[in-house]
Length: 236
Length: 236
Image (cartoon, rainbow over all chains, first blue to last red; front, side, top):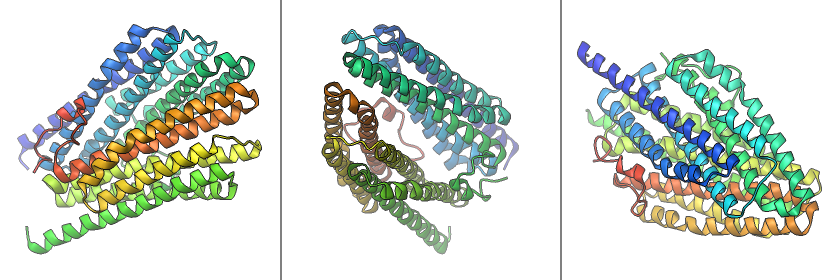
């Protein structure tokens, strides 16, 4: 392969990575805005989040398309192929985070319409900040090719899960003590679950980043599925 | 490319498709068993579902690995490349259906431990059967390369959504009329949501099947993301 071809391919990969980073920034912003909307009962912000979600769908489709083009035209091997496939996976995780943020925003609109408030909002705000932060951190890890940072995000998922469990119990308590809060609390149960899922997506991305830059599964995953992920042709 | 190479590639693609079909059968069985477990309070069946989920994880990893190998070694173009990428997408949707079934099974264990029952079970059974059926139908559409059948599944998603909305309201009614049912009903809200998500995954797979065999987005999707999915190199 001629040197200029290799360089062009390197540039295409770099473009791919910066597109993913831009998409990650938007996904983090959407999660942050959705949490602000639901916590503050801010319908204008909620509507912005709903409207902006289409951009993430477009970015996902473009990244997938660019990845398919890279595969077809450049036939990458080893780490290059891992990078291209990782781009597709990260992008689809981010697109899903966008869906979850949009869902939170839609529930804001329902709640404001019902003039509903909940004492669980501060817990949601804390959990929402944490989930957005995890997503932000793992996208920085991807940009910086920082495997240790990806491992740190992966390990931090327990904290998101704990906050979810605590919110779940808190919301059930409100439901039991005042049946008039049941509808609102049911919506907030789903908001909490959405935030927990966003944390899971950050963890998924951390596993992809680790695999992309090392060729090995994340240590400590001990997942049966990793046993099937051995060498050729994705390993170096 | 020598004839025998083309044939070998064709065989590899066919193997990939039959692996996906096997995975789909297991995913449908897991959804069906999880619904039976939660409806019948059957802990033995729930434990089977939880234990069997690892197989879907392994199958997903194997299909992904095989797809990467096909890409690296065979450098497929046009419909062949679409088929390989579709395999990865369908497999990851099925793996996620397995996670959702496992989650339903785990909630069975919690509910049986709490000796909890709910009048919503018949609604859940109906919805569960429908979600499993949609998944089964879309996997048959993939096996048979039947684009019309994929379109029918895609159109049928509304029915799953309607059943979800009705169950959501039903569960809230139980919570309001008897606060002792709140914990159980909260778990069943998530079960209903999981079944609705399984319906969404069937819909996602229908879109992938349509795109794989036609090179075009599913008609009527009108999704902005499809605008980015135009020709080269995935189109024929």
